[in-house]
Every structure is written in structure tokens, then in C-alpha cells.
Image 1 (cartoon, rainbow, N blue to C red):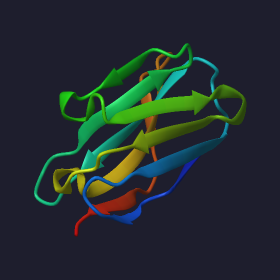
Image 2: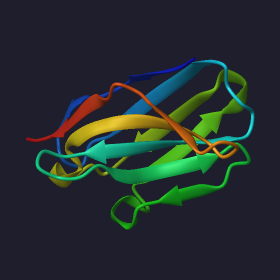
Image 3: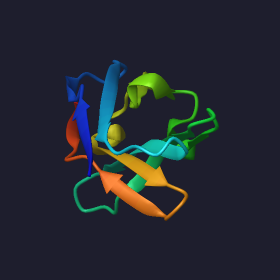
Amino acid sequence: QVQLVESGGGLVQPGGSLRLSCAASGSIFSINAMGWYRQAPGKQRELVASITTGGITNYVGSVKGRFTISRDNAKNTVYLQMNSLKPEDTAVYYCNLHYYINDMNYWGKGTLVTVSS
């Protein structure tokens, strides 16, 4: 059983910053990818950023240069540093853990990020 617990969401003004954290617990395979997805009202869930155990990162184009994903493998924790936030970044952000070995995905419950003045 895998559990993902997110923290760090909230209300921020445009141009501000937030840092999201997600801690995974349970039976964690060492080879995996962790990432963040988001879903805005009326839109489909989209990948924001991901990072493999080896540190390979991937970002959606709209956040490149503004968001940075990182992870602490010893703590099974992934972070998303979000800078220069825009109103269009407003969404529920979900943590994801993906196992390559069996193509399984696990999800956190989500944390709301609101960018508004």
C-alpha cells in the first residue's frame, strides 16, 4: 500500500511563490518517477513536472523557467518550487508516483493553489 501526502498549497498573489511537498510512504520501489499534475476547473488533468529516481526531469511548456521539481530519494519526497505564479496556474495540484515495473500509478488527494490578487 502506497500513500502520498501533499502539503504547501494556498493563496498567493500573481508573481508570488509557493513550494509544494509530497511524501510517499508504504512499499516504495526504488525505481520510479514522481511528479505533479494539476487540474483547473473545467479542464483535464495535466502533467506539470516529473522527476525520475535518477533525477531526469520533465516539464510542461507553460511552467518551464518558473517551476522547479526536485526530490529526496532517502525521504521518498518530491518538491515543486513554483515561482512567478500566474492566475492560470490556479488549480488543484496532485502528487503522482509511477512505477515503471508494472505501470502502476498512485495519487495524492490534491492541494489547492490559488493565484489571485
